[in-house]
Amino acid sequence: MSPLAATADEQLMRAYATGQAAAFEALYDRHSKRLWRYILRSTGDAATADDLAQEVWFSVARQAPRYAPRASAPDLPPARFTTWLFTLARHRVIDHLRAHRPSASLDAPLGAQDETLAGTLAAPSGFGPLRRIETRQQAKQLLAALAALPPEQREAFLLQAEAEMSVGEIAAATGVGFETAKSRLRYARTALRRALECL
Image (tube, rainbow, N blue to C red):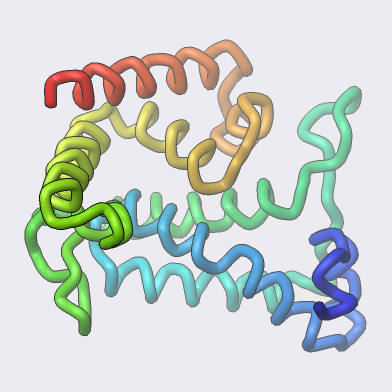
């Protein structure tokens, strides 16, 4: 196990800012998959997720010398690295969506392995063919319900599901009040739960 494995994200960013490339690699290894999934679920396109994730990591590298976690309010602790990282990703996604209208099919191939967006949520093959079909159907239903959510609710849900942000962090990242973020998250969960109950 690498000595960097137990190091806090914020310390890794400071170490990278002083020239320790291994610190950046540790951050990337720790957060790249969740970041990519967040972007994929927000845009519905694997190639776009690849491009935007790469832009976010370039931004992290460029901003490392100036990185200083700040609190979103004077009485709160400094923001976590992941809050900052996913806020960068959120801005990239918003910019992309403003410039392009998303049109993703749940059954369209995502990339080189011809995996579909719904297939990325499917359970491991150890459940047998019938269970895999049910899981794929549930994944399609969940993704369809996620896509049908109002953008603000989808964003709140994805920030919590992929970035593991608290309601307060979601509020700070999206520039809304705590109660607004909490309501968006509650409505998103309710809608997704109803969609899955219909199966």
